[in-house]
Image 1: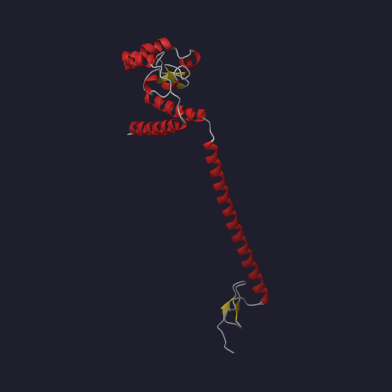
Image 2: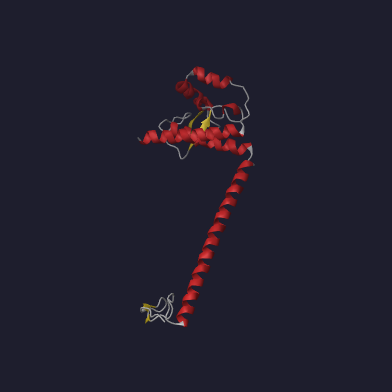
Length: 199
């Protein structure tokens, strides 16, 4: 029978003389302990893989649910999303200008005020000439403060443009696709405007 060199036990670390070529522990007790540890490692690895698979499945399910929820969102949701993007752009565009109605440079909060309201002229809801930076007092507490708004608007965009806004009665029903496109366009425009100011 061939003799093998002494080895170090993979379990307890003691030196031993193996009886077989593939033997890697010094005794049956060490072999049992090592086998249990290896089984435990396999179980932990299996559990880790199962958890990872479950997380991936849950994420996919959440993504599908999110997509389904977005698909059934009403038109009003998309109009609101587009309006928020346009308003953010207008506030940034006019950030160095005073309130279009009262001329103040200080306000607790700034709105994007419409000259012709969104309910009176929904077709002008996203028209940049119809929306300007306005203090919260004029926009929300003074119903837009329209008389001085008109005077300042004529100074900013000209009488012809103001009369175009006032005489526009072409009704338009915004579609979901249009609202998504407007939202994306104005988010991009806002990003470009901010990067120009930073440069």
